[in-house]
Image (cartoon, rainbow over all chains, first blue to last red; front, side):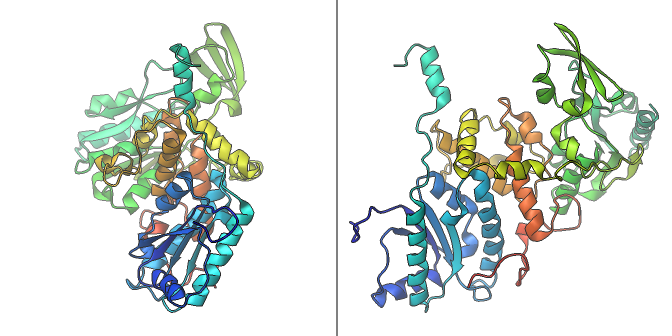
Length: 156
Length: 318
């Protein structure tokens, strides 16, 4: 249950195991207030982020997606986040083409000690998504199947 | 006429000398608007080769599966980019390849032409900027620029970027009104939700036949395609538009920074979904971000396979 009065939105956060997940944990241990709309998925490294994960989240009903990893040059695997940065930036620019507001996606760097920074990041992002509202839903039924059903005389 | 004769004799010579086991080219077929892909295996076969407005198919798509054989391939300017991209990724070997490059000033687009004439096209001849099309209903004329593939109207690489032998006179790149990316810009001017609904509507027609994937010269995962993987189960058998959209996005992302916008995906689509636009938008962004035009540097590395510690074009995240 949400502790807040407003309805929750679905926001997915992909956090790197070594920095940002630790950062979120630090924020929790320090009892910093955080919005409850975020569902966290822990990934081994931001370099593991296939932009497909983000696309799948959006088309699966997420209203916003946040990716956070180690600061550049701080990667546990030396260069994972460098690859991630290129991919995520390109994907960010691809979103408007798909008709998804690029504001709904954010990627950033939070280290394990930065509990405060995590709190700020997640609060700002959730605020932003709330101001945008829910993502338009895809139509449920398949128009081709509907047509087929009508042709077969099965439709309503 | 001289160009095709030069090409034929060069191909014949290569086959006679045994420099190649086969040469991929085009030959005439029953379709008046398209030549068929053709494997010339003997010197006599060379005489069957043709080249013209119907030589549409990007033959580079056949190369990865012919790996290990000595293959000659006939390429237009745009096709040569696919070859260069395959080379840069090590998917084909330069030593096994003989490239016959042709300068080209455009190919016909059957879909585009079909929208402008009544009935099935039975034949087409060209004369000074006009295409005379015969259909069952009679003859009609279409301006050449309305019959060419839209890609050709903004072609930046009419001459091969790499070739062992070049044929035909060099063609000047087109300078389209509004620039090379005018189509992408125009699409991005639509309201956001309209773009979202555009893809929902267009891809609602998708049959998930995966012809777009199979026609793509750079889709080389073959039987390891994530679209058909059951573990993880990226795409379900659900018939809704979501899986179709996801598949397209997946294909775009897998070819991001590699796609040479050859348009084979869109051409292969049996229900005419304008999916090339997605890839073009990504190609433009890859060019803006990484200064990389896919398929122009056979020695280069695709931008997503590398990085810089300091990226000048990517804003710092504070």
